[in-house]
Amino acid sequence: MSKASVNLTCLKCGNAFTARKDCYNSTDAANWEKYMAQIGGICKECYKKEKDEEREQEILKKREKLKKAVEGCPVIFPVLEGTEKQVAWANDLRNDIVSQMMEAAAMWEKVDQLCATDPKFKDNWDKLFNKSAKWWIDNRGTKIFRYIIGDRM
View 1 (cartoon, rainbow, N blue to C red):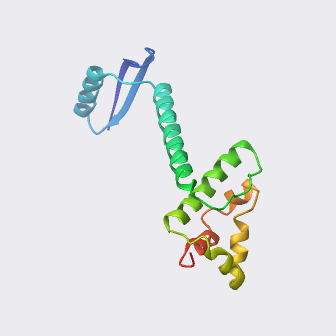
View 2: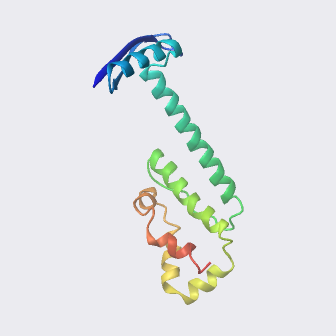
View 3: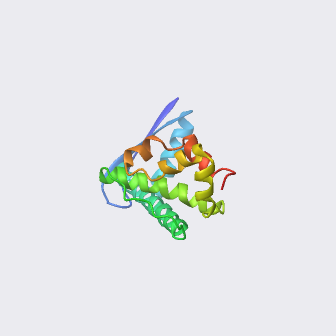
């Protein structure tokens, strides 16, 4: 086991940093050091910032996709209550459920009939109108949503 270490200058911010890697033998370590010296690299701070920006872009894309999927929904859900982060997360969860219902070609006109004939469906349907963001977060991935999205719609 050999340790490779090379001093580099960050390609993004220009700060000096040291890159380290554990290699199998000294030849691999020397080859890696030579390779890194040729191509350079970015420091941990710039790498973290880059990944955070990518993650944020993914979240924004997903939210936009969910909003577009929910646009045709004939049901108006209540505004969620909670902290700003809870509300954002719970809205994503709820929009995901609604988009799944829209993709499943849910027959919205059947909801009243199902609520009248199936008490379990009515109970679960009423839960979709919960105003608590905490409730949506705590109940994500439960059978409640699978029951509603399932064959009944």
